[in-house]
Amino acid sequence: MIRIERDDPGHEDVRELLAGHLADMFATSPAESVHALAPAALSGPGITFWTGRQGTEVLGCGALKEIGPGEGEIKSMRTAAHARGRGIAGALLARIMAEAVDGGYIRLFLETGSQEYFAPARRLYERHGFEVCAPFAGYVLDPNSVFMTREL
Image 1 (spheres, rainbow, N blue to C red):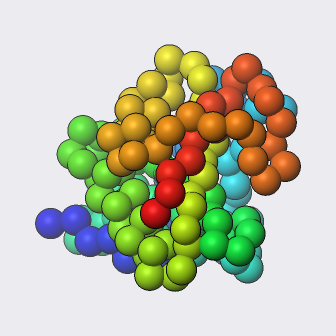
Image 2: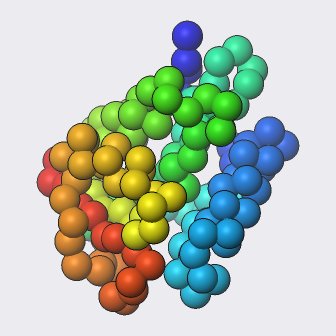
């Protein structure tokens, strides 16, 4: 059974998962197009962070960053490579969306890559009602980025 709970991105196992996330982002996108956050930034104000665990093993993570009144951005969604295809990302996203509703958010945004590597992520977000939109919250148009939004 997978447990989705608020967690600390500073925990060693979570930092390892996030290090893999950052490495993949820099391997697939030019540096100026990488918008993933390091663990220290994910501990900052206005950000809530969750992990999906089976027992003590961290299998995935995701965060919600407040970007304005009633608006949030999904950040740092990641599933461990050996755990992909098990519904962990969908469960994390559903939990983040539910918490956003409970917190009074009315709209969520996200940025993901435009490369083929990110196609599974884009399909996940589309299945959860996200649609392509214009850049938001200081992002600029970038051929390496896809911006998405969803009303809650």
